[in-house]
Amino acid sequence: MQELIFTVFITILYVLTPGASGATNLFNVMDYRAVGDGKTDDSAAFSKAWKATCNSPSRNPILVIPASKMFLLKPVTFSGPCKSTSIHVLMSGNIVAPDSKSAWKGYHLDMWLAFTNVNGLTIIGSGTINGRGAIWWSDCSSYRVPQALTFYRCNGLVLKETKHINSQRNHIAIFNCKDVTFSNLHISAPKTSPNTDGIDIASSSNVRILNSFIGTGDDCIAISSGSSHINITGIACGPGHGISVGSLGAHGGNDTVEEVHVRNCTFNETMTGVRIKTWQGGVGYATKILFEKIKFIRADNPIIIDQYYCPSGHCKNEISDVSYRYITGTSTTDKVINLSCDQNVGCMNIQLYYVHIISTVPGKKAYSFSFNAHGNCTHTKPVVKGLQP
Image (cartoon, rainbow, N blue to C red; front, side):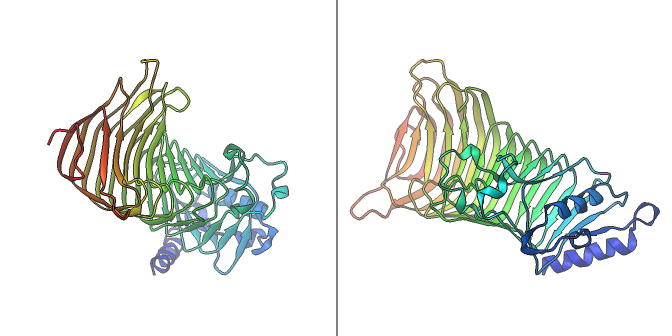
């Protein structure tokens, strides 16, 4: 229904705002000799259609990927900047990756589909992006495996209603972007598929991930260094590894994450729930993080802070101002809260308020673990020793 409304909207744009010199608004990949049979390589047609869209003098150019078609694409980068500050992609059809590694010969293996330096980009539609990742999942080196969909330096980005399945590595990566809204997405891969994160966020700010289903073999959402003001709401996560902040400091750099708010999310049989992780030897901080109104259903490790032990005494990864509020559910382990903070730096101002998690292990009572964590714990079961009531 929402896609129909959008189709009507772009038709109105086409009629009322033809753009400069009567330029067309609509650029259908079929008009650039795409075949859409799922077997013919349509990469060149998509590149030509994108170039025409990006270079159009129209105020609202629209790239159309029509329904009832399956487009086989090899690695393609859709580059900007574009003439218009409002670029739309109506994705009604489906996109598939090559089904053999030999088809990737001569291409870089870091990305499959990428948008770079495109501001004001909106992608909407019921189409599916299928990475056909099974041929890659046995590869031990995840950095030699492509990301399915990458956005780099795309400000004012909107992605809505699309489906993403069986990525080669992570399904969607956001890097160095501002003012991003993802909503009503469906992202899925088998729980045994390695490194198939749902959404990875790095060096980005003002990002909203809303009302989506994410079930993969790795993190549903991972928030990495340089990210701030991240709002995640209404996510159904599972299977997978939950929602993670970090790992921070993995390469010894100055990694920072702040102002992360995760609300109204459900974790169904995930390996971990909400996790903050830093590496020893790194420098940086994770601060002002809120997990609120979270429900766990048979999650293995619901709440984790993991600040690696630092024998040198020179570690400076700081975790502070982290709040867990109105959190309930069940865990398949009896250690349901694990706050393992560094012995030298510690975790400061950790707040737990109305947290109640029980174990599904027969005869086992849920318990918590806390090391060098400082803050308050109110109306929480199990009680977290070391935090003030």
